[in-house]
Amino acid sequence: QVQLVESGGGSVQAGGSLRLSCVASRYIYGRNCMGWFRQAPGKEREGVASIDTSGGNIYATYYADSVKGRFTISQDNAKNTVYLQMNSLKPEDTAMYYCAAALSGPCGYTWKEPAKYNLWGQGTQVTVSS
Image (cartoon, rainbow, N blue to C red; front, side, top):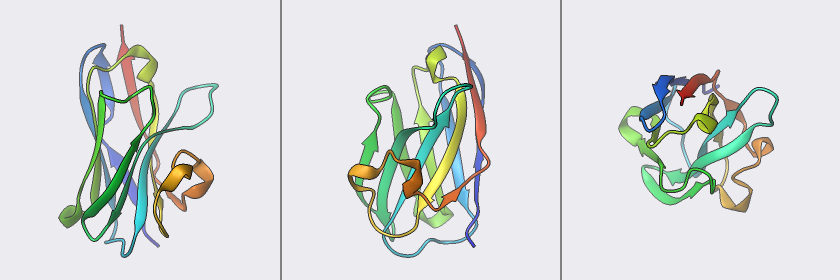
């Protein structure tokens, strides 16, 4: 069973940057969808960004409207790692951030749906102060 481990969270002031990392315990073969989600207290888990990938090839990336132009999802296939670069952070970005993997098939239009993903990391906290 593949395990996902996130890191990189922390506390920053508004306008700052953080880079989250998600390391998979082993290489994930075949077409898959890796995503970042976040959940703030009292709110539902929401999709932030996803990457549609296979063997190091990137087929597509997806972003929530609220983070477009500020966040970038990327991967390092050799390190089994997916990143989320977060720039121009806002207080409303404060949440627990989770990495997730959908092990079969592309992301597609359902990339935002948590039920699509088979595996989840434990989360890393991001706090943005004004």
